[in-house]
Image (cartoon, rainbow, N blue to C red; front, side, top):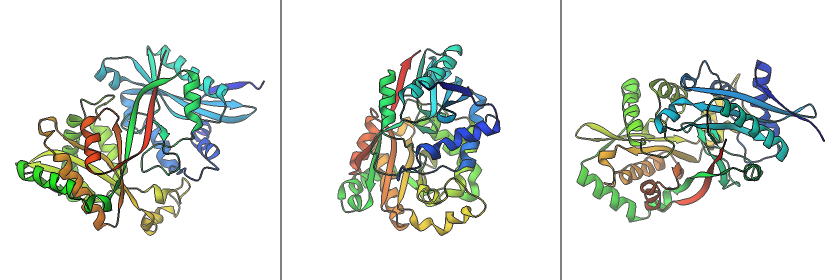
Length: 373
């Protein structure tokens, strides 16, 4: 029987092995979208990524017969545990060949590291947190992932189940069809009624006042999502870093603020699905692939509703319907007729009901696993 060696990532070479393992795992998968290598480097960089100012992470590689065959990260998010008053550790960036022994060795190593840090359970995948790519694809494998959503082979579910993980929570993703919505009176009627009653005004992101707009995002995001399971507030530095990353891809007409009496009470971030372009780049932005961000933009057929939230005191007034109606009409003007609303907690009744009002289809699910340490 071949020996499995688990080693800690400690050199630049090993960091690249950690990142590039993806190309081995997914080489024959037509639905996989290669991430930009420079973005992956930044995401796991403990100096450049402000997430690691309140979190610790260790990366591990699995080697068998002289080949790299798996990887995992063990993550202790101090802000999560402070916010939720628990001792949960996380695993993330999990990739593995279809070999239960390799998967077990990786999960064991992550558990061992987290236990030494005082964690009493391990949850994931979180890459590296709930504010990044989150969850393991459970249903909907015959489709490419939308922007910033996860993708994995189906056998990963078996690797987790056989290890002893249990379901912590499922996340829903809905397929939204503009044509279906616009030809129905239901959403329009609900949106118009809610707008008349509340006096809400929807406006686009003002790129010339970007810094001030970001302060509105921070306010709404950390207030509207606070009650949600697993939520961790974004620090100012994290929001600034996220904004810097997304700014070159932002379509201002799809970043919406809702105002009542000149006060921002809601926010929606909708991004064009640049995964359709990234697939053409094979992980490299330079030297010339960055040009494809413009020349290949016609390949984009989808948008993703990444966040849509209203602060608590204005919830349950149908204001989400106002946002949805604006989104589908603005997207149509850009020639985007399909959207994904994701991700939504399986037990978030208000958001799941909102997706149903949009006549959308629950077409993908993601799972968060957990195990006691």
